[in-house]
Length: 625
Image 1 (tube, rainbow, N blue to C red):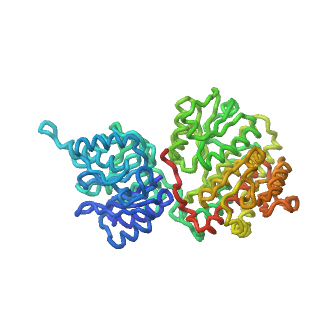
Image 2 (image 1 turned 180 degrees about the vertical axis):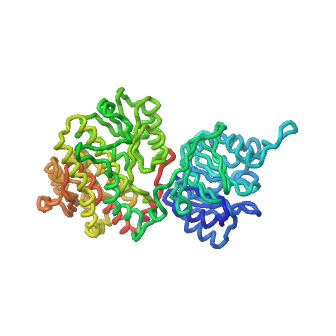
Image 3 (image 1 turned 90 degrees about the vertical axis):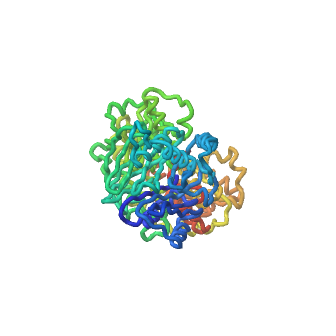
């Protein structure tokens, strides 16, 4: 996912655009650029590399003007070079465009433009093709012919954007300016988020509201196929097909301070330490001690409809899917409803058999993940009730789902998801509790679960106090070339998530497996220089995990074990390092066992000198396939 920031107003655009890009750098950091319009034309500064390099370039050659667009790139088409950095231009050099997404038919469009002799391309990107196409349509239409009056320059540019996008196959979030049209920019979206920030005598465009929340907290979240024409003191939203479009000005719930690092060296560490509050907020107002159940009114389903559910499919990508896998165990155990966790990318492309009363949950922190949004749309297309679990109440998934649960986790900036994972697991626990109490769970069962959930924030605070000792363990294994992670039952998905965290921010080889699969091939990998991490709380399968650890130990494999308080004595002579977390119910333990492994990955990455918040090749939100 790339980042877009646009501004039109009375202030100097450059500082605002650069500040917005810094806030969006977690979305893309291969290259960056700005295009600022003034009486001299379009002033452009762009380069490969991080935002800091663009800032240096702009300090050496300050651009001036009161409106412009900017971009931070996560490469899709074309290598990471200065030429491939955005903004891109049309043949005249007067029209500048920034783009998130993928133009799937760009090659056919490019060949047609070349045949017509209307383009000389300087980049390898799909974006430059779109800039040339819009520029060509603008230059050749709407001028009037004696029988029809000419359109205004602004109307002509909007018409050119609309006509070009009607030829496009793929996804886009774009911002466009033209040097012949002062104080005017255009935005449009399909499948890639774009938000309009509404200010006083100034307006903004951004791919994420976090880029502009320091300047305004009034926002319009554009829908797919919206086109917005933006001036200093007004804006107009229309549809791609023509005609007006419905919109609502929303108040942004967080502030600029909420998206800062505070006293922490990295966003990831800050967000790990925010989990007592994010878990508490995920439960706030959703537990009923009187009914010994959960209250989730946002599902928009009656008790009768919930009781009639015969099967549940949970779909997501990456960390969200790992949370969904825990949800699969939770719902089947507590509610006895057959549940399946599906890769969103597979769900949308394969013909998954679905019975009539199937309920689908689409999980996405951003609410914009392309594959998850595609799965949601496929589910709805087939007539199944589809609910969302996301962290952005104004996101596309939140708006297009039939209902759902908002995570209340607050902004998550670190590319490696942490607090969103535990919030998702908490919400899935609430879903399982609600469905279970409607079926066979007793009031005593429900009360016990609520008591365990309410204890979580305090227990997480205890785990966070282990950060320094976990740092020492991480330092001990800094020379390892990779790691294996093992867990059983509810903690098998924790092994997957822990391995993903290690891969994301340390770049080490890591795999997660069910502990019981050790002897089915994986044991061939065991050796003295490959540590194994076991997630083995004192649950119903603790002795089974212990047996698997003995087998690794017999083959001289180093062992790190995350277990429950009081189990260290049982692990003497087996585990080389033991990390203990507070005791809780078996099926709630993943919320506690994952946190030491988040800290372990973080401290190991820092020890290895990795850029924790901006890991290579990754971006926070994957809004393209």
